[in-house]
Length: 515
Image (cartoon, rainbow, N blue to C red):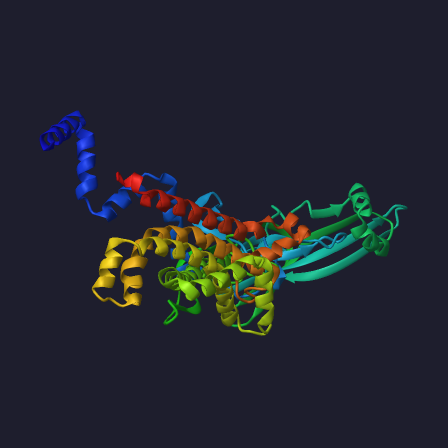
């Protein structure tokens, strides 16, 4: 009989290919971690998700260094500003990335706010009223500022031909740059024609405004340059009345690398004010646009990621600790301990999650500090999540405690808790790792939902869910689509966690290891 088995085994080996023999050798002799990594690498989406998550956690850890603005700095005058337009060339020459400051304008009829780029005059060249040519350049000959004095004529023409005429003069330290030849002939005409006014009249939102203005056929704004005021370092000022403006140029605001700006503490204890990039005031760099308070959405996404991404890790740590401990005790001891613990878990599972979240959060005082609120949200989510984990661990422990190695440990007189934590729980590690990676998205969504409803993180702190609450306003959402960017990051993070968990599950599958 032994000889027959030996011959069968040898024949089987002869029928194996070289690749199959090599694979069989690896499965038998390579460490398990090597086999797991080899199996995990076969899951391309899992590898991609792992790098995406690593990138996300890396940028939120160094959010202070990567942020050009403080997440709490407000600039309401340019609230809901669009993402900054970055330029690379100036007058046809490559000078690197730069931007211009923003200012706000309101439509005379709709009162809707719009933004335009402005800048200081860097150089002006022309002819004065005395017939003498002039050239002034910022920073040369002690020139510290070039101020444009602009005449603004606002004309409202009625349907019968009667109109309103209003003239104002304004000194512009920051000059509008979006229109070529703004100071040259022909004068700039910004007008709203009758057809456009009729469209406004059809919208109930603007009826009251139009009634106050009257029956207008056209509204026209004309701007023209009158004087240039030159300010010097010694405080003196010189005004130049113009006959003609031949040439002018604007000051650019380059995006600088490794700049000194607002102070923070790296890793919570290292004081620093160094940032990866930034721009000089009054320019504001909005990579992803601004929110309703003029805060930088890019910066708040980085800081909000700290909250949203850490909730899952801390919540899983609490949930799995409670679930492992109670599930292990319930499955190992059985009896009355098992009955009490399992009935408790069934009661908690039967309570609707959303209502329990809202009820538990409502118990907390509304004036809690943001840090305390964050910890309470984590505790609430963990409190909801442990019953399911406990039931699964109980079932696994019931199976494992019948194994020979557990019986041997009992025979050697090991304490029950040592047997649970040193022999039974480690054999559930495969399930724990996979379940943890697949459960983290639930915690992230839970925090986002609470913050979105106003029961979680509150201002001035940020989280992706809290930032999405601004997108509830359909008018704001229609005009400022960049408010949805936190939702995009939330979607990518949750999808990456799910794909990463799927890859881990496949990697830990014994069949994928060749067993």
